Amino acid sequence: MVNEAFNPFKMAQQQFDAVAEKLGLDQATREFLRNPDREYHFNIPIRMDDGTYKVFRGFRCQHSDARGPAKGGIRFHPQETIDTVKALSMWMTWKTAVVDIPLGGGKGGVICDPHNLSMREQEAICRGWVRQIARNVGPLQDVPAPDVMTTGQHMVWMLDEYERITGMKSPGFITGKPLGMGGSLGRTEATGYGAIYCTREALKELGIDITKTTASFQGFGNVSQYAVDLYTQYGGKAIAVSCWDNKEQKSYTYRKLDGIKKTDLMAITNRFGEIDRQKAQDMGFDILPGDAWIEQDVDILVPAAIENQVNAATVNKIHSSVKLIVEGANGPTTPEADEVIKAKGILMIPDFLANAGGVTCSYFEQVQCNMNYYWTKEEVLTKLDEKMTAAYHAVSELARSKKVYMRDAAYMISISRVAEAVKMRGWV
Ligand code: NAD
Image (cartoon, rainbow, N blue to C red; front, side, top):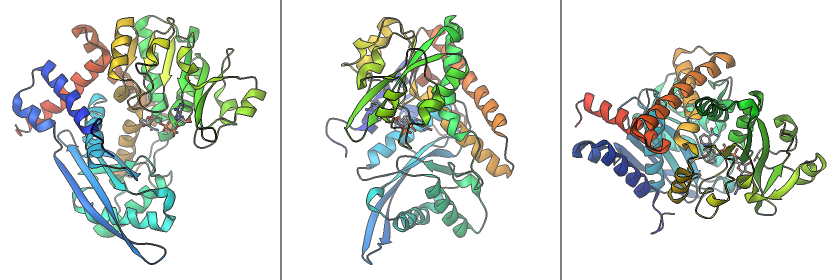
């Protein structure tokens, strides 16, 4: 729900306005980019399992397709709002631009709660969503993907409906599909690995040997598991991860000072990224309060759980040993905390760069689908490394040459790239 105090779209516009000002963007380009190109609102009528009819509200927002087809997930959430969808579509534009992939930004959603819907009802919503928007999406227009509470299964239903309507096989219509149904190898690893490719480059720039570093992670879900995996493969020592305990409705930190092995911890973690506390204790982990991950005497912090975790209340707990923060999650750091981090001189790899590995791999999935030729995992991950490394260095060089914070540099690169595309097309 959008309350008076927090409107994500207003926040996205404010962030844009601040960077547009720094870049000296002309008024017409600012007007053009601070609002989405297009937004669609529609009804999705469904016959429920009990025979009654219910009408769900669906959205798709295409913030920008100046650099290529719009790209972004579809969320199923009871509190979905058009302003959340608009904000997320704008952030997707900046994310695809910072990694320089030829896609724009989009997002979609349906106001619904999958917890209270049967699989048949969810399938009907997926197919209904596609029927309403099929003319305005597609591999050359706008490419959806899974997001909050949608999975590979939902993507396959959506693909099937799209192919029925168009009468053609178009696996490039949607990404996040299961392997064998047009999905890409490497997608599971992509976001966590992408964050660690950036970490590796940052440490090189700082003149720090990764094998002599330690790190603490918040979260142990998809992003964090694969971040821990590659970081330890590179010789780093992961000493702590935290995660949510659903039964107790609070988080805990799991610490092992002689180093966590991802495989050991995975064996006692469920599909929601929740660690079995008793088993962890038996394996010799120290069980600490949820916030302890941020207080550890480590070189690197990786918030990879949820938003608003490094904030005014927690930022001063960061140990003086920390040299690098890598934002695996979306929006983990608040603007107040950013100011403290800047003042402490800690290097920050901002979210829409650090976690862009996921969308980059989705782009690779689409490329493979469009060619109908699929790469090996090694090929996917090599290409991902090249993209993430190049993106990291572009942002880092700008940050150094203009003496700006990494987050500001990342925004400056993205917004300049999109503004340039808009200008070259002669739109403003
Ligand atoms: P996930 O659901 O697989 O895992 C989330 C983890 O965070 C779990 O271990 C959970 O226990 C933990 N967690 C939740 N609340 C917590 C709390 N209050 N304190 C400590 N731990 C908590 O999610 P994910 O896919 O790993 O995504 C994590 C973040 O990364 C999200 O912000 C997501 O939007 C972002 N992201 C993910 C991807 C992706 O490809 N998976 C891509 C880009 C961004």
